[in-house]
Image (cartoon, rainbow, N blue to C red; front, side, top):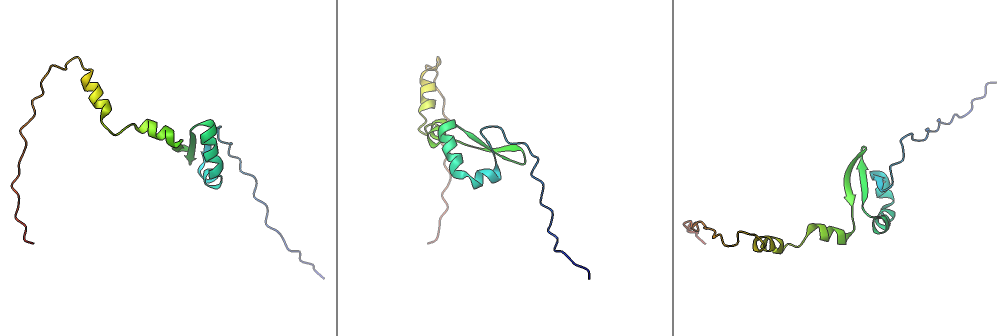
Length: 106
């Protein structure tokens, strides 16, 4: 009598890809361990997320983002113009352009 045994599929060998350097996360690891990634941003600084071995995004703290984004007030431009050595130069502004207004039936 012939006996048949149930064969099990061979286990996959472990991945041979090198571990990313500190502060770098593979996308799938960043998704699976997002809470840890956020904690690392707070404790260690910006964290890079890679896709197919290339940096795609950098996760930074909100206050760092606000600082890098800068104020949207135009204060930097006003300060630069006021500190210019050419403050006495008058700017000739072009005449304003007026366009005829088209009648609209309501």
